[in-house]
Length: 115
Image (cartoon, rainbow, N blue to C red; front, side):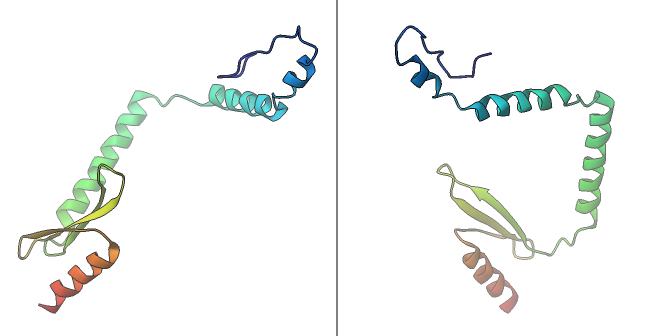
């Protein structure tokens, strides 16, 4: 058995024993444990996945139909550099904004409710 990304040492050199010590026995044990977990993992049947998906869609639909349409909408997102920012929307004024921090979102909400 070979470890992924590991090149097997040649045993012809006198320092072959030193090269063999590079392999940590824990790596082999971890790999065997991961392989046994993978082999035990079960495949979810299509009808079960379809039922789960339909339940999720149903829950989303109920949330959308029963939510308060006047409440502000705040979504967290990431830019192309992986930095977090927030998109905020006020359905009453149809005003949109982008905030770079949670503090800015709080200030936006405070201004909204102060008006």
